[in-house]
Length: 494
Image 1: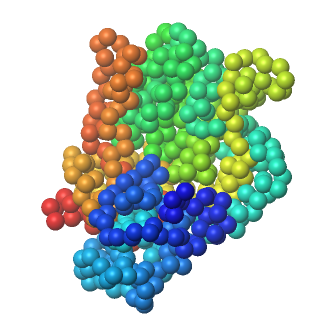
Image 2 (image 1 turned 45 degrees about the horizontal axis):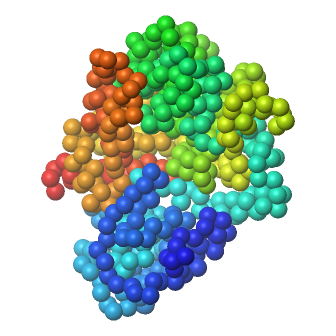
Image 3 (image 1 turned 90 degrees about the horizontal axis):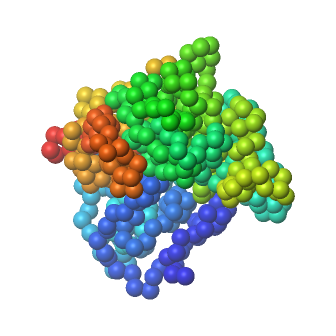
């Protein structure tokens, strides 16, 4: 294993990740090159440290007095935070303008180190930031993981059962069934509804690939529909336009945390609706029929969730769940997730090996009580951006009527989206288009399109103009201001 290999998750949670790692034998100055994955983790050069390493190491390893090889200065100006490391040989690179030492708490809040190269620029406002919210929960997370290790049951044990009860109660429904990931959750939910060969399932094209990818494994055909230009979610009208006599179900995506009008879709089409709530944990809406407050996950016939680490509620790997108020559907989901067996002895169907494991369930049980506060913080980001003047520069997203969106992604629109993405990244701000190519234009979906293709004008326009800006459960007013300043500077050509 190379000396710079990432520390394991368990060591990171227990605090061992803070130990100073060994350097490669030949440490030399190299030009930083950016790389980013779906978690928003950014690296320069060949080494990609996890966020937990950054959070702990920033406190222990940086010398603000300028002594030693790790001395770092930080410059905060024009919405940027620059971090620079000096090597023992004195190579310091270009000094940031008006640089000054800053306290460690500033470094913890605004800078995430990702590399052991002698010079590194790090993102001042990452697109995602999961480490900051998790840092104060390290003792509880450590205890939870240790509890599972000591118990010795790692698959479908007490932690999964407890999380399923707690999550169902929090959603406001009767049943939650843990599965391996959000994609499996959609496949299993559709199978539970009886979707199979010869059927059609309506799904938006402006969404993550998995929303539609989950349909062909059931034997059904995806039929793509358009979305609303303001909420970017499906509507009763766009779904109804795609319904045919062969339509068996609808996958309605609560995109970016906004809430799709599930009740209207069910009333308009009379068809079963599967909520894809992967991005909407923590959002709320008002039930049209009763005026009561409800959460995504309790609106359709079934709902699916992803607990991928960057989600509003994310675990330490892959995880997912299916929720429903129907006991028969819940039992069907449980059977399908375990190879088609209800009792682990007799098999009644061809199922899947798709189970949420005990370690992930234990982590989710620690995080779930904090989700309401995190969701509120995410929801208020919309007001923060608007109050900071972002709406004068780009088109802001519109929360669905009667809903509060716990934004998983804060997606704006601009005819200069690509220019903004490039300019903001140069300034140390995470921003990128998310679904530049709509799902119906991806090559593997060509076989499912009608001969004349499909006309989805809103989807095409959103794909061209949308841009995801930073949002997290801990984003600060200073970071929001930095993003708005950066957008203004790029649009002004500065």
